[in-house]
Figure 1 (tube, one colour):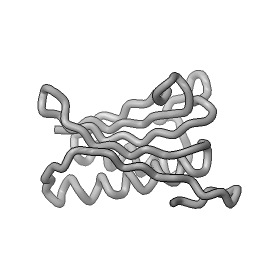
Figure 2 (spheres, helix red, strand yellow):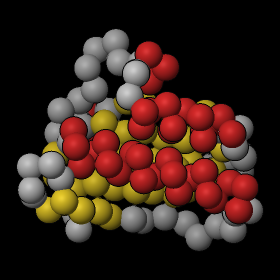
Figure 3 (cartoon, helix red, strand yellow):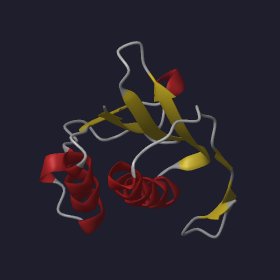
Figure 4 (cartoon, helix red, strand yellow):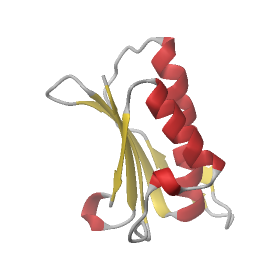
Length: 117
């Protein structure tokens, strides 16, 4: 359970594949997950999902999603002035990853995904 700023506890679900990663990737990913979980608890609603998958091209996909309000129109992580989003972008770049974002399942909430090799 993760507590949000409104004092509510939110379930955090972590379905995913087991993969081995070098520390040079695992440590930045831990920072990314920490920041995305914080943002999901702060801005989202309902359960939070953290997922790690490998696609057909052998790229890894780490995503954090939540229910609740969608991202505002025109949302651009590159223009965010907050430290958290700067950390996410910096660590995604450090591992050669690409940050993607959009609505979560059911076209609600938000999903942030880092794709990396």
